[in-house]
Amino acid sequence: MLRTATIHDVPVIQAIINSHAELGKMLFKNLAQLYEDIRDFAVFEIDGRIVGCVGLTIIWADLAEVRSLAVESGYIGRGIGRQLVQWTVDEARRLGIRKLMSLTYERVFFEKLGFEVVPKESLPLKVWSDCVRCPKRDHCDEIAMVNTLLDVPIIQAAQAIPTPRGVSIPVLEYLED
Ligand SMILES: CC(C)(COP(=O)(O)OP(=O)(O)OC[C@H]1O[C@@H](n2cnc3c(N)ncnc32)[C@H](O)[C@@H]1OP(=O)(O)O)[C@@H](O)C(=O)NCCC(=O)NCCS
Image: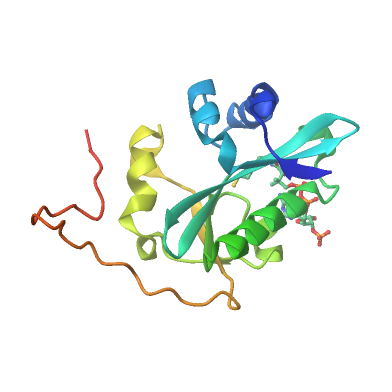
């Protein structure tokens, strides 16, 4: 059964993600990150036991990122990963977001689900704001993959407009150390 996550799921989500992270397959997640982002997550449950998870993070008006996709090792190869990614597709469609992306080592898996490899440089700057915290930041070897949902209308990018008193709010703000 696939369902959206609750706060109770955080410890198990963390255990599944970090069991793969210590093998270098994905990034570690700490509890603070998971509690903060839990509304982005769905989990896959079998007989009341969580055996997989995925997160969908909105990056921009037309882009969301599939993150923290992980299936417990004993349950790999049973179609659970596919269903978790399908949840992100359904969720992106519900939100009106046309493109999904993933930074991954699992090229064949994502190709089977309609993603294609794109140059990393084609992704917006905001994608890389998280890389500041990544140990591999200067030698990132993940592949960028995108799935465009052609039935979702193209959105006109919003412009940053000054406030009534003329204050300009930057479109994007992030600090680089
Ligand atoms: C990648 C991962 C999520 C796949 O989950 P899964 O439940 O095993 O995937 P599924 O069983 O739904 O596989 C869907 C399809 O992809 C294929 N596939 C899955 N993993 C694959 C791999 N590593 N290489 C090639 N094909 C793969 C399956 O054979 C299946 O193909 P089919 O539909 O033609 O039979 C899982 O292996 C995992 O958790 N890996 C460790 C963490 C990780 O790498 N996460 C990705 C971070 S972006």
